[in-house]
Amino acid sequence: MAEAEKEKLTIVVFSGELDKALAAFIIATTGASMGMDVSMFFTFWGLNILKKNEGPAGGKGLMKKMLNWMNRGGTRRLKLTHFHMFGLGTAMMKKFMKENHVPSLDEFIKMAKDMGVKMIPCSTTCSVMGIGEGAFREEVGSLAGAAFFLNEARQSKVTLFI
Amino acid sequence: MAEAEKEKLTIVVFSGELDKALAAFIIATTGASMGMDVSMFFTFWGLNILKKNEGPAGGKGLMKKMLNWMNRGGTRRLKLTHFHMFGLGTAMMKKFMKENHVPSLDEFIKMAKDMGVKMIPCSTTCSVMGIGEGAFREEVGSLAGAAFFLNEARQSKVTLFI
Amino acid sequence: MAEAEKEKLTIVVFSGELDKALAAFIIATTGASMGMDVSMFFTFWGLNILKKNEGPAGGKGLMKKMLNWMNRGGTRRLKLTHFHMFGLGTAMMKKFMKENHVPSLDEFIKMAKDMGVKMIPCSTTCSVMGIGEGAFREEVGSLAGAAFFLNEARQSKVTLFI
Image (cartoon, rainbow over all chains, first blue to last red; front, side):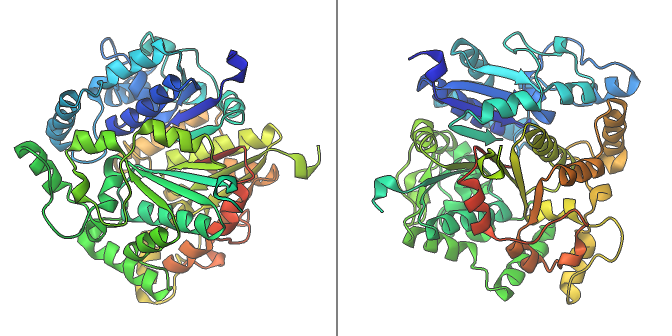
């Protein structure tokens, strides 16, 4: 089937919690494995999922540096929506995932990239929060705005806001 | 109208708060009353909505037993997203609903079942969290995975992630 | 293009946080600028976004008066999902938006109205929470229920639950 004929799946990832990130990537990689053309748009706290685990927190100017230090991001720093319990609940969830052979979030991001899932940071939120493109891991594509998202979404069979 | 021709409505219920559960069931039962074919997929904290109010919390192994005890679930234990206030706000909301002749969540679940709404727990999250099928109330259908959800969603007129 | 032929975008706004409200209005106004016919349904905490900043909090009876006083709403009282920090984080976000020439939420609501975006409060939640139509700002349209929302959604190219 030609690329142009593939059914599209578009996901806005607004939230930056580990559980919501996992839900988004489980759906995205499942869609890709079913032959769907998948785009993920990351905005607001969702951008934290795509940030590098290493390196400086980024941000220009003192206040944005502070914001990016507090709102550091990276897959290893994400918390559960509930029962984070100073890291204990989150560590437990990761352990259960491993025991059930569910990939980690890092593995999901790599799988998604390998399967052709597009991971697109929202340009407006990046500007507002002072996040440069250098803050993101290598799997991440170019920035784009809400018009690009809506253009994908209106051609999609399924659009989700997570 | 034949089953195959009915318009489909698919809802992912990720959240386990009382207000989000109510929103999901109000939309689901309204869709069913309009003649739509409605499927609800429950995942992560959303699974709590479908758990029995009585009986043991479940879970195999000490850590999963602990998790399921803390994350007990059942319609009577759900909290509001805001203003739970140690149960006072949640009780007030339930009182206001009753005064306005809005069904309770338990009544909504029974209505949904009677109207043919499918309530499907996510098999992957059930494995990870150690929740057996015996944990769920009688209205609940068989477990299914993300591929089953996406297959429903891509045939749906409306898909929501709540 | 005639009104009837316009592609539709429908957004349920369930959440009442500043960041989610901004995401909803960025998408809504972008859709309108692309020639889409946009409807926003506000329910539960999302109703707070549409409340007047001035005037009495509203509600009939002592308990509903209390609820509406606590759950006051209005664009100026909304908080961020994370990093509200007693108002400091929220003020910082507003400052960064201004520096990047991103409109404020008040400006977005006015823009949306001018662009023909329909802003519809959910009648059921208004009854349950004791919110009268007088509580809402002038840009807001008439109340409607879940059936009206689903009827819009099933004709829409894109439907989001925020």
